[in-house]
Image 1: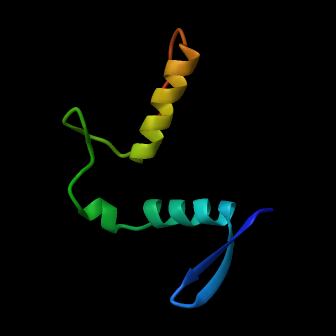
Image 2: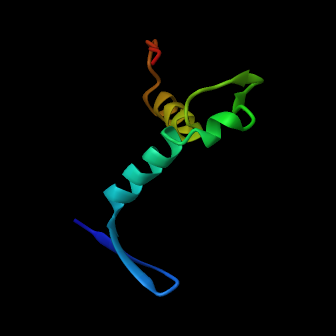
Length: 74
């Protein structure tokens, strides 16, 4: 597994790319501070998805050109 050598004020930290992704998700989804700020809007409608997820959906839809999409809620 690839590990990155990060330094912050002289402190070296070894962390894998998977650990960085996991830490990002935990910080975003389990941190209540992003819920208390202004809502994230798409065409004026509040969304509860991460904006990066919306970009990924758009890319998949453009590339795959599906005949229909089945959506689900969480």
